[in-house]
View 1 (tube, rainbow, N blue to C red):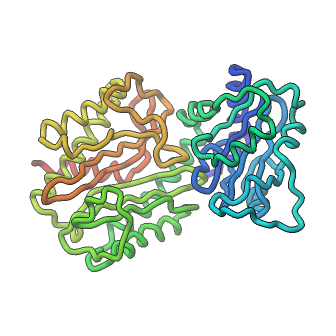
View 2 (view 1 turned 90 degrees about the vertical axis):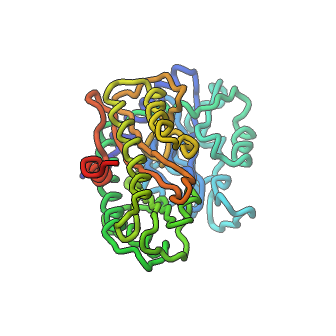
Length: 397
């Protein structure tokens, strides 16, 4: 498929500027780092390694990307914006000392801003990514240009990221195609006798081989360890007949796909295990079918919760079963029972339905991705959707 191109990013910046205009914002800083890269990547395609980064946006000039020296060449390779400036304060995100770079000509944040807009014309400025930014960098921005009004700019991007463009949807489809390949490799393998680490590695390798740019996470737990809820894989060996909780999330072109399916090592669940898996799958299916009926988001959540309550499982239902997808594993929308908005065409959502701490069984989830459309839901994971549909056709309790 064609990768996301500069036109896509130009369109995003255009929409950002329209929002800036409505709010009388003259300068916008969009922050990202190795761990919280989603906003910065959304507007530039740049994903820092070790370091931080910021894109400076004004109303009538191309954006400028601020990086630190180690990532300068990576930024040139990834970013769609090629005006790149070196800023000392954008450096390492987890080294407390100031790194002593040699032969580097740094500039100041204020100098970059002055190149883009007359300092006296800045009445209001914003930062998107305040929740992820270090207080040191935050204070540095204020020290250099903070003599104007500050407005938190998080919603400038979060609202845009809520609805996926055609190019984003194609990228998400490709991400899930890769994730399906990785996850199927886990399901197809005989995991008995392997450690959880070895089992997780099967899916990670297959996903990398299929084109994943990054393994976002592998949740892997077996037997009693499923009650860790989001356990990392360990050296525990997987035993025949144990319930397995395995989730794989991969990144492709910045977009994240995540799959999870409850299963038993060796493929022969007990009656109690099969009933448990059935309730998870059935609850998710109820939610999926509800969205097609046009219910409010909160009502969809209530239907899933009601099913668990009717089957005496409500105390094992810990959090809402739906969250958004995109450049983060979980993003908006994230409805609960009180959410009174409708799911709208273009939203990306994951069903992430879970039960935790069921006596003598354990914990597990089912997760798969969709795009909301005028006709219901567009399936992103052919693998998990196929497993769900086949399971409900063949298993009755």
